[in-house]
Length: 184
Image (tube, rainbow, N blue to C red; front, side, top):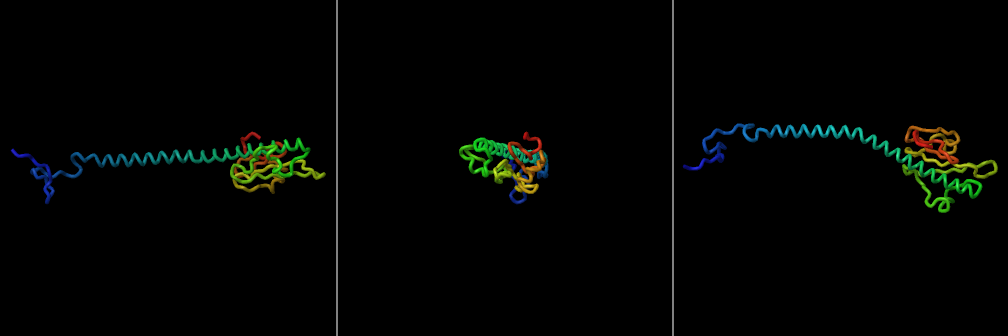
């Protein structure tokens, strides 16, 4: 007996062994559609899950990054303040400019806050013309001072603030405006 051929006819596509033509969606390839649908639904569920996780995580990350910039700014302002106080102990008055502090009172003096804006320093002159006080300021995230300038803001302390745009001010050894929850 000869062998049975299962190959399709070149002209009509029917099996050459006389068997009926297979119907679409039956036989060994019938589950392919279900597999494709399952993979597509699974992919959509995964994308939705990742979207929810991102919606929760990204704002928390951005807030944490801003808080880190505030803390770094406050630490740098304390460093400048310690150098200014050391200078005042040696010279019986505060410096008129922070440029005189390095390298004797601070090896490297911070120049910019956590957002990249320069720190501002202002000497407070008394009636005799001596520098009797000082204010160190950071304009914070928005880069601009509220309250009519550095000295005006420091002379009317506002205490803790809740916005990342609020100024951070250090005057005569203490913070007079600082982020809420931070230890002044």
